[in-house]
Length: 236
Image (tube, rainbow, N blue to C red):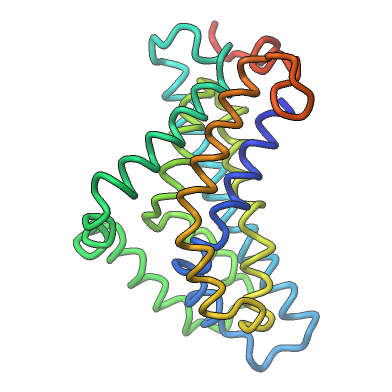
């Protein structure tokens, strides 16, 4: 189970700079200008809690769906499977079809529908609106979310799928909080450099997860963890 926490959180942490580009403008636009410091922190908590709620719910759905798939041996080799998924994601998204990434969002009905509802919520004065904004934000189409959901599917378990996605959401929190509270913590040039290095980060983490799943006995890189061997199952 510890491997699920680590994988989910690291995926979110690695993708947090991608989130700055995608969700950063939305976070900066949160109606917090006239609020006290305490109210701002409460608003940010509600926003991120809402987003993590969506991620966790989606993780449960994908974990449940994965548990119904006849994929023998996936649970026992979870780290290897997720590592392979990450490498395939990098090759497909950043190498094979780089021009199609943005085009997908421009014509996505779900994206347009959610952004319209977000526009309405931004005009509301209810403090719990921040939670709803976070929930809808968590449903926006995003390549990193798709990657995490595929990993949740590979867990073949509703609890592990939900936890993986919840910790993925937690991993995106630090960078977005720094953006919300200042916006200047990450300069444009720095963000661009990190964005360009993101494929390398994901690819490297994919390789590391594969090595960890192989349990080669190499300290820190591939220790004997037994990932997936004692995992919980929801099969009857």
